Image (cartoon, rainbow, N blue to C red):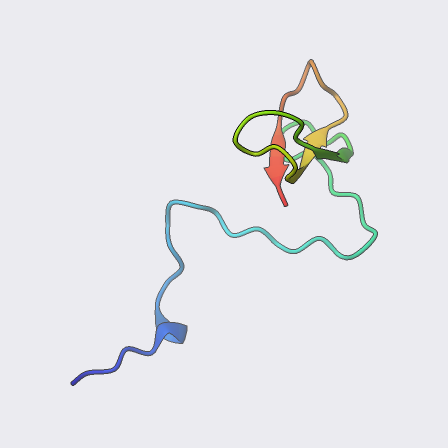
Length: 66
């Protein structure tokens, strides 16, 4: 039986790796550079979940999952 060392495998390619945001730090929008705001989805399948939304909305609709 062969055991696979998962630490040596490459990360899944379909989703980019996100660097963790230091506690208390406000990330910048990856699309336009404006600060992001921590928001909570009110409706839909993600209702109740938090995400970072660009403060430039509606001009910039970029979001980043927490």
